[in-house]
Image 1 (cartoon, rainbow, N blue to C red):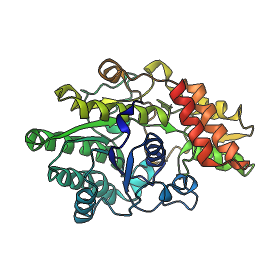
Image 2: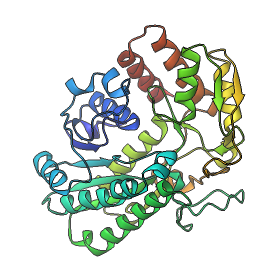
Image 3: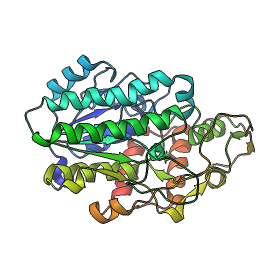
Length: 349
């Protein structure tokens, strides 16, 4: 990363979440003035509190579904850069709360863009969606940014709806403003400090910490795994380029992920994790479980060609860094210092 971030005012929505916490810490380390807007952390143990971020950034609790609260926060912060990560981000929770998922992911995004339109200053906005926005036919091909959007489950469909809203607002309203906006599609992110329910890495960490057997509900599902610092690096590169250039090619969507040859099944992730923190696992898949995609792969060529973004850590390195974070913290290591060291190691790679 360059000196671009020194002194920049950056609004991170969803800053109390897993990715938002890593991003906020990284930006703060780079010298940015970080302001947050998010709900309070849901989990009793959470990365935001583990990193002590409420004392390091301008921490603000608010609901992205509340248009007036969003508008007030944007007006107060007057951001140079926005990273929009606030979301209902779990597939299974989307089945349980479909309306709330759509309200958060689509209307929350609309509220933020409307608030940004009222700014009379240049602003680069990176709107974070997911790799699950595509109409996934599970045909083995890696999806490109111009492929059809869709989504079987409420979470995936709502994120596709978010992409459509971003495109509509950008084409309808932002052309006469100094707002530069792009969407970022990445998913299956792993890294230390994710404590969400029904995610494989937190499930692994909780089980191993308790010396219990890991239950794996979809061992054969294939995903484009990447360490959390990979897409965050891509988001920051995209934001910097948006700020510096009016190139319309930048105001579009970008996939961030490993090469299609690097996608791996959940089973590989579990077995690799156990080489760093020994334990046992069992297949707990159920034939009548809620639908989750069996195969998903992204083509990151556009981000490589336009932004120069390529993965720094291999699948094996990403798993090693992730599991060592959990194992070290379980053994008493300071999460903040450990995370700062991992960021430095990633930047040096």
